[in-house]
Length: 128
Image (cartoon, rainbow, N blue to C red; front, side, top):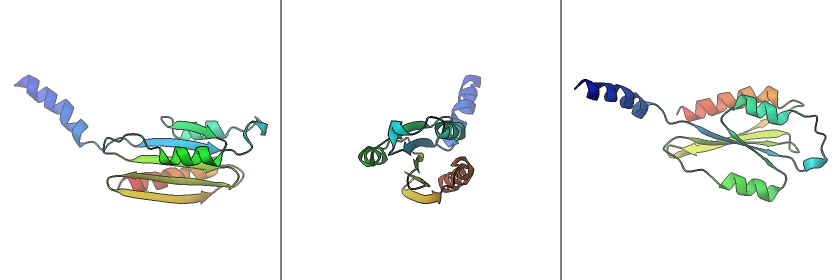
């Protein structure tokens, strides 16, 4: 009986906890390797979402393929964040629990300044 109670105490919270949010980040840089290596944009995104997968893409076709490839879900939200350097914006969007969401954020000289707003948006949308 005590064993069943311990198992229940361990399993029930895991079943009631909200599913983990899967975040993927893509950085579109059409200039590719010709751009100066002194930017630290990759590090900024990795610091914001430590468990996210960060992908560098250098063509619009690669970005389109990446946007359409969603990982298998376990009932939670899947979120994709795209930093388009040429368009100077960050797009955030996701899907899960029978709904989808998307928005754009204009980026100034430093994309790190806008990432807090992106993170707030993602938290708000994935708590619905």
